[in-house]
Image 1 (tube, rainbow, N blue to C red):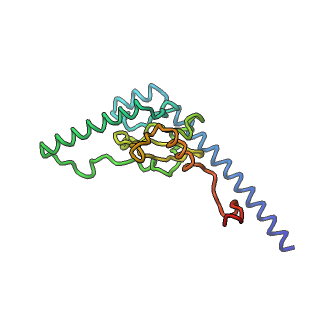
Image 2: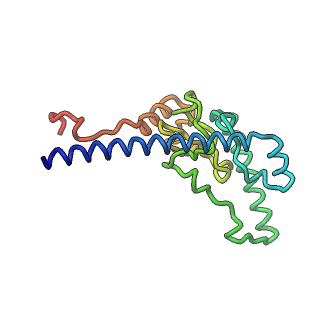
Image 3: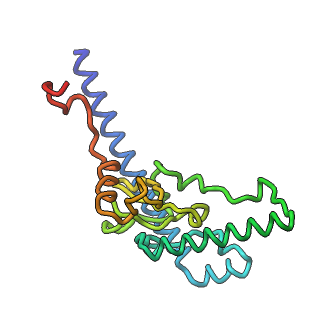
Length: 195
């Protein structure tokens, strides 16, 4: 009789967790759709631009995701060179910037974290391929991101690997796909002959 009660409570717990998960998923979908509607409204954006808040708003929709191409790499190099010239001119003029005023990476766009809901779900064709940086802090650095299944962010250096494999090299792209693959390797899946 005691085992029957434990079994009932387990199924009740499972059912409640399933219902709670469905409610949370629906809430996130509603939140995303409301936010897209607000940020996609041109009148709201114009009002926010008039009060100089538009730079604080994240871009909206699938147009945020762009493939990482050789042209993207050239643009990053130009930004990097311009930033170096600006730092050099500050050094020559002896202008110091407080540590609080220096740009910092966005905490919600860290590598290993899921993509924030404000960006929405990327189109399936943008998963597991090199994309341009979303974080403004890294846009002048030689990096690119890859979004895996579950919208997990991975950040990679765009410099040639082993001094000869560019970020567009098929061998490097294949290696990155193996690295970020979501299939968990556990001891249970390895045959005993290999242990």
